[in-house]
Amino acid sequence: MQLVIVTGMSGAGKALAIRAFEDMGYLCVDNLPANLLDNLRVLYSGGDSRRDLAVVVDVRSGKHFGELIKVLPSLCASYDTARLLFMDASDEVLVQRFKETRRRHPLFERCNGILDSIASEREMLVELKEHASKIIDTSNMDPAKLKSEIVTYFGKGSTNAGIIVTVTSFGFKYGLPLDADLVLDVRFLINPYYVPELKLYDGRDQPVQDYVMSDPRSGEFIKKIHDFMDFSIPQYVQEGKAYLNIAIGCTGGRHRSVAIAGELGAHLKGKGYRTIIDHRDVSKGARRGESA
Image (cartoon, rainbow, N blue to C red):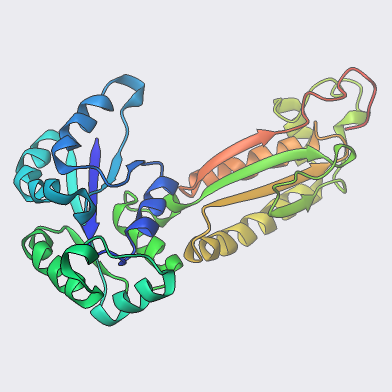
């Protein structure tokens, strides 16, 4: 069970950071008092609910924030891995961000000014910064680069952890998936529907898969898809895309699209991407004599 504590300067990008952890499947909590961190471990450490945690702890928690440096040693002993991510940026950039967002610094009322607030917060964070496992300076960093940095360091060794790829098979007669990012048409491949002994099977069944793959065009088509995905998905990851839906369609969504979608999904899983395979229309039309 892994814990990542996200802390650092207000305005340095902690909210963007926590979204990156959410996309990697972490359970995320924002603005938790430090003395409740161990309670969180107890709450989410049992059975199927055991999950990696990412928690933002910063000066918004007021007097409780000072407890963080005190509880760090015990947290390191309580979790399999406990790391501290420190978000930082230059004073000039922080001032500009607060002006642009028109948000008030958490220490503004105490310090009576944005510059004094930033200076006071830096002083409060000096010791904590020394304990950081990772420091990210976002002064000249866009959101996509920040996400890539977090995924690279905290994504268990693979930048692929930062995107969820859904491969959806569908039938054109039922309409395109509304959330499709990429659409591939496989209606040019030979159709198992017209083979009596295959008609009532679907693309998840081996006889149908073998028949579809017996088309000489299938192998070349799949190779081109693999090459395209191997090139394009890392570009989406670099741009910070969290989800990608690849829709593969045939006439009825039962045979050809299902077989090709299953093959592509297996390829992407082999590349380390979190992959969901969804056969949207596989149960439609099977006994109504409709074409697949």
